Length: 114
Length: 114
Image (tube, each protein chain N blue to C red):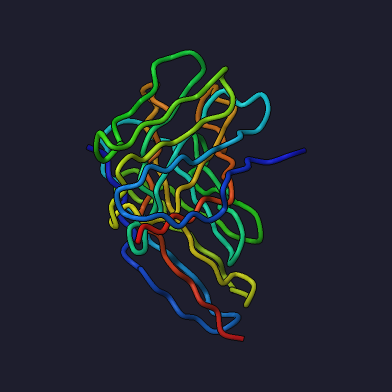
């Protein structure tokens, strides 16, 4: 079956512009995660959604970052007024959401802020 | 706050050498532990996981990991590496208190020389 998909695969933007990154999780997965992968920094947790519960936003680095998940499926991560330090690979993952199951990762969106 | 430490950032081995990658976490409660792998150009994927029971866990491709609770460690091992094991390896921990938040280490880049 289809895995987690993300778009765009690459995004180049100018400092100060807003960007939107999209994630389509595996059908039926109720948990969805966003991570940021920077060189030498590993995977930094940003936010997760679990069903209809309030999202855990504890990893968002600033109020320029926000995310939503519509209809319990597709999620959008928005970065406003991008800064050069926002350059990274943004990864999305989904899981069944019933416990400590396997996370399935997407290919990521590589963001470059000039 | 929980944290995960991977002390080896870069490892270079010759084929047939034995591998051990260190992973230590800081959390006093019950945890679930994971190793994920990212092969060049591919998505992150699960290598193995520990939830409970036998502390020696076997995963795909001949990898295994041992959970040592007293040392807060979950080291990854493979008796004889292959060139195809060249990848980046991430350790992750999740507490079992009901949160769906995973904490990842900074990763270890393994290069296996043919």
